Length: 396
Image (cartoon, rainbow, N blue to C red):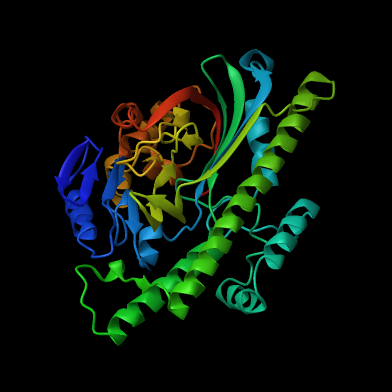
C-alpha cells in the first residue's frame, strides 16, 4: 500500500497516469471521509475510478457507484469433479445454458418463468407505487430482463478448483433498469450542481446532499436496483444448475442432482451505509467487493484466466474492501485494434466457448495480470480456492 496523498491510499502496483490523476481528483471532494482506497485492479471510469472505494459523509455521487448498479458475482460449488465431466460433450452444455438464459445487450425473456415471477413479485412489493411507475417509464422490459446476462465482461462459467471440484460461476448486474436508474440520478445530480452554481473538477463527480428529497429518492432506487441485481444472479444460477443437471443426466443415463456445497453472491458496484473510523458513512464500491474479516467473496480473472474464491481480512485502511477482478489496461476499441481472433483462440485453448470475433475486446491481454492483482491484494483477502474455466458463456 502507498499513500498518494492524505486522502488517497493505493494498493495498485499497475496504475497508469490517467487513472492515478482521476483518483486524486475524486479524493479532493470535500465530503470524502476518511480517505479513498484505490484497489489493485483500478482503471479509468466515468467520473470516479473503477476499482475504488469511496466513503462519503453527508453526500453521495451517483456516478461513483457505477452505472451497472449491483453488478457482481455468484458462485456455487457442486459435489461433481472434473472426472465426472471429462469426456462429455461440453459444447452441448454450453448450448443448453445459452438457450436457457438470454444473452447480449438488451436480451430479455419472452415470458416470465415461475421462479422469475416470484422474484419480480418480491421486488414489486419492495418498491413504492411511485418507484414502480418510474421504473416502468425508464425501462419497460425490466421484468422480462430478470434472468438475463448482458454483454461486455459479463459471463457464465463452469470451472474446476485446485481439487478438481466443479463450480458454477457467473457475473452480471441489474441489467437495463439499473443502468437507466443510474443515468436518471446522475442527470438529477448534474441539475442540482447547476441549480446551486457548484463548480466541480469533473462533471461526473456531481453529488446529492443527504437530507434532500433527491438524495432520499436516489438511495431508495439504488437499494432496490441492488436487490434486483442480486435476484437476477440467483435466477440465472438456478437455471445454470437446472441445465447442468439435465446435461449430466442425459450424458450418464441416470438422474443427476447438484448438491450445493457452497453459494456466494456478492456485489462489486454498490453503496452501503457502514461505520468506518468512528463515523457512519456511505461506502461506494465502484469495482470493489466488501472484504470484512472472514467474509466470503469472488474475484474473477479475465476471459480464459483464473478466478478466485476469497475471504476478507478486514483491512481497516482499505475500508474492509478488495478488488473485484483483473481491471482493464486496454480500452475496448484499442483491444480490437491490437488483437485478433486467432490471439483469442490461443488464449482459450482447452476451454469450451463460442468462437467469435465479438469477444476480441475481452481477451486476457486487454486486462491486468490477475496473479499480480491478487499479489497486490494479499493484505486484503485470503485466497480459499483458485478456479480454472472449462466452459465459458458470453453475450455479444
